[in-house]
Image (cartoon, rainbow, N blue to C red; front, side, top):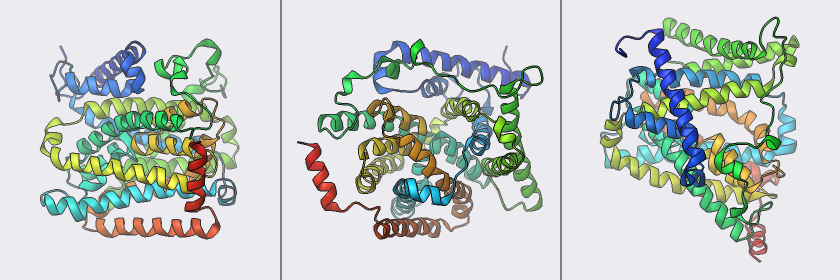
Length: 459
């Protein structure tokens, strides 16, 4: 009935039908199963796990095609193509004035996770297991800091350079990262509330039901976007979808064009899509087209792509690869969790004077799981968003984004050409420079002040 050996549009339709069905089942499970609600596990992750268990990589009951491993690479191009189109204008001066410490925190979190875990893989894991790829260590930040999207992007780049196992390893760390983000995050929230370190909640158990079930009552529902074009000409959603797809497709053409002229250079499609999106955004700002681009609608397209990416990505994990690297993978994950914990909360205490826990718990969710996990945890401790953590992060992350794009782009290329050690050392040096800058400018909160604040919170 389902021939998935030859790819046709009907095979794509079948894959989408199965995944969307699993997403709805995942949502039903989230609404009905209390333990899933308590753990805040997203339906996209449930769908991916169901696809993994019952699909070709598991019991083989669902006729998913072998293309499930390719779809995430396309979807991440859509996500990155949408990012610049939805971003507001900003200046470096504005960032420095309003959210300088937040920028330092976000940039440190990114660079130190990549540097420490990359060096751990090269200098420790590879010494114990010589047959490991030298880039094994960066599979932790690929999945934790980057999430399933980065795992798809870096995995496809490594595959193009000859390491076929990278995608499955990255998807595995990303999936475990989501669980770590939720379970660890809820533990930290309960502990912080008990020690009076939270600014806006006093009891973890008094959370609104919609945060647990994911279903919004009528009085708390919001519009998903504005209609900016008349349906008599082109539907507004179609207009926005066209812009995002053009950015992603433009990235694909650039990547393939570079590959044609210089075969040794493998530019990831998502990086090129981001650049195309930036160019489009600059042009649209000049010609006033940006007035008709609704950020909410663009973000909806990006969020939909992310849900599909997570579901397809988890479903495409090759369990044989996970079993093959089980022991070094466990070591990597345990060390990674400890490292990220200290990065999040040590630097959080020293760089956030106000609402330090709210801003740190958002970082924990983001830097172990995904942006969505960070938002979920932030809404638990700051239901009315009074800390402005989201606003500050959104502004502070804009100058961080190019650094992340460069990292994701060049990590596979440099590691596969024997230069991974120098790249990771460079990230570590940059981290120390940011700490030096924070101390020099006055962003850094002294140890005595941090200790006094901790003592006051526990009274």
